[in-house]
Amino acid sequence: MKKNKSIVLLTGFFVSLASIGCQDESVPKPKSHLSLEYPVAKYKAYDLPSGCGYGFDMNEISQIKTKGDCSLEIQYPKMKATVYLNYKTVNNNIDQLLRDAQKLTYEHVIKADDIAEQPFVNPEHKAYGMFYQVGGNAATNAQFYVTDSTRHFLVGSVYFYAKPNYDSILPAAAYIKNDMRKIMESVRWK
Image (cartoon, rainbow, N blue to C red; front, side, top):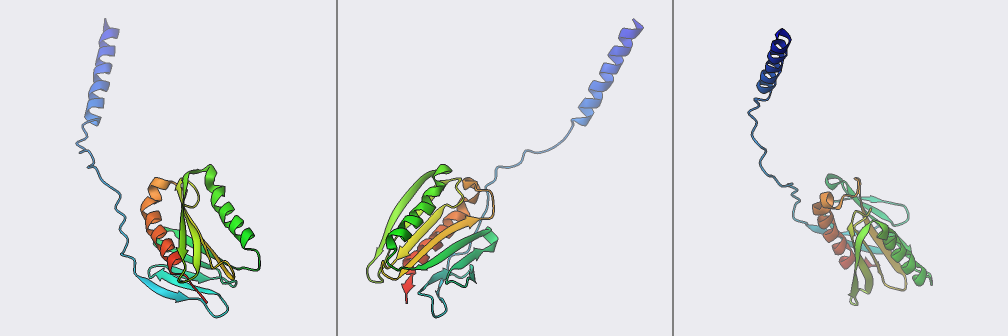
């Protein structure tokens, strides 16, 4: 009997101790949404040094890092992203340049949910190309190429410095995608 009484007392002690420890007066967290605010894009003309065959309009919040071969990195530090622009001169190799640009995009088909192509034609500035939107958790979610078909060829792609989780980077990706489209549409050949 004494043994049962001790077990009952110990059980009662642990139950009361547990109930004291569980008297947390916490309030459930309110529902919230990720707040990512980016400034309204303001574009300015950017011309490369002489010897490079193009210029374009760029977002004022971005930072340019030039390469020696007329290629550029357009950096977005707050969004942890970079748009890489690679410039090539056309020397009777337009077919090869087009294949390489398309191959670069379709290498992401393994991780991509879909790839949407949007042709671009601007006969006034002699600029023709393709804008690719890559959906899903691919390493890049937007790429383009633009050319005059005879002398100039420019390829652009964006990469984020984070694991490609499409839902997490979607606001920044949409913002930069608009900037990439502006670069493509405003390209000026020299």
